[in-house]
Length: 519
Ligand SMILES: Cc1ncc(COP(=O)(O)O)c(C=O)c1O
Image (tube, rainbow, N blue to C red; front, side, top):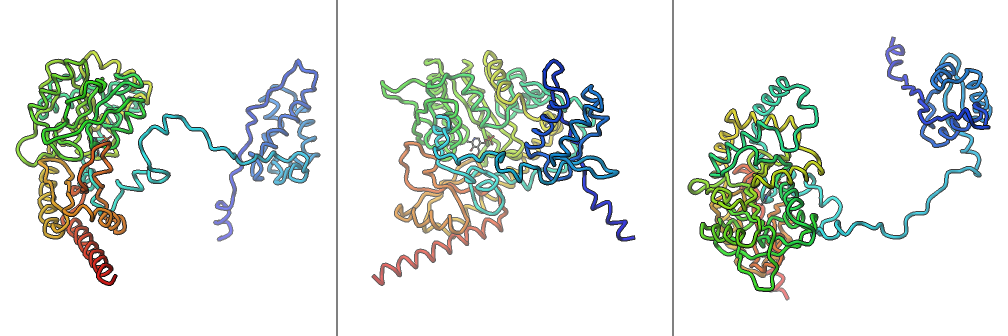
């Protein structure tokens, strides 16, 4: 009983070799059976069928398939048998031999290749991306954005994602639209989604747009890349904020754009320029909430920027990545909404509002630019997943989006207040917090600059990993600070990691003092 039960498990799958590559030439002087013998032998020598479980088709099947007589096939196979390439198993068929003759004949051993001595040449493009990370450090899943309580900046609370509602809507759109969601889809994006986003932006970001101005993209990073590729030739100039979101530099470098970093003051990007400085084709800004410093661009600076763009035939790229999470007063209107000269390319993302893994974002462009953006997207990867786009469209139009934003704003406000209070109590000796009106991060300036290396080492050692502000700087020479994220963790988790950091700093401080005294 038991042996019969175990038999099916032991049975190995026998794959029948298709020999798709065999080409017989009836006009050649070489006989057909020789051609067949030689070509089958060469396929077997390739080593792809050498595990003893590959079966040959029957001589009848092979003859029918190739339109030749069975005797021609038999002649070829008998020669292969005789030379040790095949073995027969009565009642089962003909199989590739476990050990092919070449295994014993050194003369026909496969060539061994010398290891490559010279470094592989990579493109200049790879080298010009300003990024010192190597290997696994690139893997966002394995590094900063992974699980764990790390206080890494810019991570939203993905465990609050309304999974059940999303799954329900996803099932509904699949049931309703069926195979239509499985085909290639519009490069502009799902029509319902563009409509829903246009309505949302007009109502809540004071944007002025209609669905035809919207292009759905795979997040902000792609919005930047598509815009840069559509608007600038390699070597042309973009101005960007300094410090800035690290991916902005990398994306622009990938597009071959010359980057000119511009400093910030407490009103936003400083657009004054020296007479010799090249004029930009595009200016990348985060006006609602500057990343990473948290400054909100003043109205005066906004109008100045728009005037500058109009006067110099430049465009402004407005990265509105987390405007929804403003804790003091109502959200500020977007720059796009006050632009009367079609100078703003506005972009948003669901990475902070919902979750980053969806890879969904949107561009709102002046109408004459839309086709060029779409052309770039179509040459890049066509479009984002139609299933997720259709689900997001329903998620927005049925009110889940707004209620999620409202709920998250409340959760983040509580976490932020808690973080500030605990941080000041536990770490106020070392840092001064700069409390922003919005966003998921807080900048903590060092009270004693000389402590920077020690604090940095400590954060790495204990796995509480705020980013050093200098990581986001290009030329800016700012005082040492760290950018903490607070949004992704519960108050208990926040307290635990702040306590851990505070006690590690206390221990290190004691050791340092002890070292100094005993010297
Ligand atoms: C300034 C800024 N823009 C955009 C994003 C998100 O980009 P994406 O939509 O590509 O995830 C981030 C994420 O941290 C950010 O800090």
